[in-house]
Image: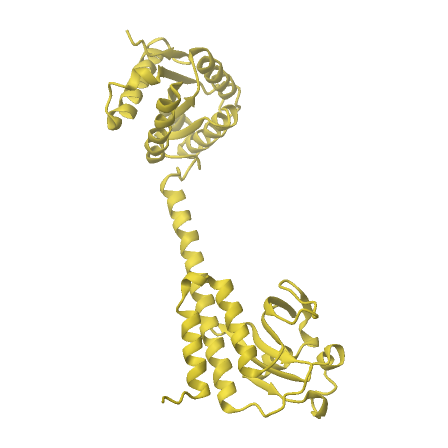
Length: 349
C-alpha cells in the first residue's frame, strides 16, 4: 500500500486544482484557499492585495458567522500581513496571545486572531499582497517546515498565474490597439482606406438581407495642392484634420466616414436615398466652407452613387465595393467638371 506524505498530498491536490483551467481563475483560487484551510486546520483564508498601505481582500473563504467579503479594506498596519510584508518571508504564529512581540499588535487587539500563517505574494519582484490563513483559535501544534513548503507552493502558483493573466490581458490590449491603428488614419484619427473595405463589405450583407437602400460618396477638397503650395504642408495637415472633424460631426450616428487617400474622404450612408444623401452632403459642404482655415474658404466636391440591394445582385461580393467606389468617382469627376464646390450623382443609365 502506497504511503503518501503530507507534502505529497499538497502537491497532488495543488496540481489537480491548478491544472484544471476549465474551473476558471476565481474557482481555482477558492479551491486553493479551501485546501489551505484543510491543510492547516484553520478558519479564515485570504488572498489580499496591498495598495497604498491599504489591505484589500481580493478573495476569501470564511465561516458563515464572520462578515468578510471581497473588496473589504483595512489599514495595512492593523493586519498581521504588515508583519509578513516587512519580513519578506513566510510568517507562522501558533498562539499570538502568548507571543511577546505580537500580543500587542493592532490586529490581535482588533480581531483576536490567535493563529496565523502568511506568505508575501510578489509579481516580478514587487509586492502584490499576501496569501494568509488564520483563526481566532490557537493552533494546537507547531507549524512545521512542511507547512511553510505548502504555503510557498500555493503562493508560487498564484504569483505565476496572476503574472500570466496580466500578460494575457496586456497582450489583448496591445492587439486591440494594433488593430485600431491598422484601421485608423494616423493624421485625422478617422478610419483609413483599409477600414473602408472591411466596414462596407460587412454592411453590404445587411443591405442585402434587409433589401434596403444606401449611398456611397467620395469627398474631395478642392485645389488642395494650392493650399500646400501657398501655406505649407503643416497648414495642409491642419485642413485635413479640420475637414475630417467637420464631416464626422455632420453625419448620422450609423454613417461611416474614412480618409480614402490624400485629400479624399469616403462617406458610407446606409438606409439612404438620393434626397437624404443630398441633405447630408449639402450640410457637410456648407459647414466645411464656413471653416476659417485659410484666407479663402475651403470648398469640396462630392460624387455620390445611390443604389438598392437589387442593383448589387449581379455583382460578385469582391466586386461590389470596387464598383460602388468607381461609380462615386465618376460622379466626382462630374462635380469637378461642373466647376467644383458642388454635388453630382452617378447616372446609372
